[in-house]
Length: 205
Image 1 (cartoon, helix red, strand yellow):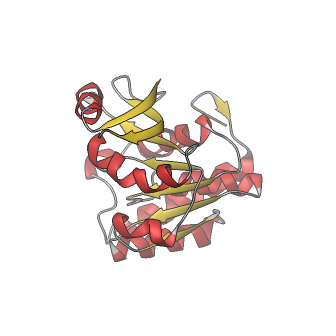
Image 2 (spheres, rainbow, N blue to C red):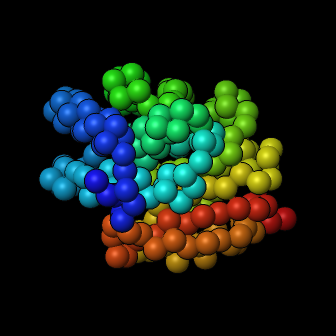
Image 3 (cartoon, helix red, strand yellow):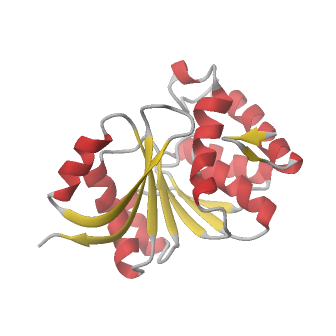
C-alpha cells in the first residue's frame, strides 16, 4: 500500500487499520473530529497526518500539541513502531480524548505517551524534543508561543505545522513577533493546504 506516493509496510497498514477501528468505535461516544470529515477517513486524516512523519522519517523524539483524535501524533507513533525507536509525547488536556489516545497507543503498539495537561504546562514535563507537530490547533502566532520553550532550549528543534488556505496571513502576523526560517511544503492531500516547517525561532525584541 502507498500513502502520499510512499510505500507503507503491511505491518504498519495493519496498525493503521486497528487504529481506524478503534477510532470509529470511540467517536460514537466522544467527538474526536468534525463529523463532515469522517467519511473520507484515510485521506482526510491518516494520509494527511502521515505527511508529517514522511517529511522526517527518522527515529526522533516528537512533541505533538493538542493531539485530539490522534492526528498526527498517533499516526507518527505508529510509523515509529516500525522503526523500533523514537517517541511521541502527545499533549492533550481533554481527559476523554487523552483516554482514547492511551488506548490507541496500547492497541496499535505505537511508540508514545500521553500527557493530559495544558500545553503551557508541557515543557516542564517534557524538557526536550527533536521535532514538534500540530494540526488544526491554533493560529501560527499562538502556535509559536507554544513551541518556543522547546525551540529555545534546543536551537535545532523544528516544528511541522499543518495550515490551510489562510496560512500566508498567519505567517505575516507571526512575523511581527517572531523571526524564523520557513519552508512551505505543499500538502499531498489538499490542494490549498501546506505544512510549514519552522526552525531557528527567535522572539523579536
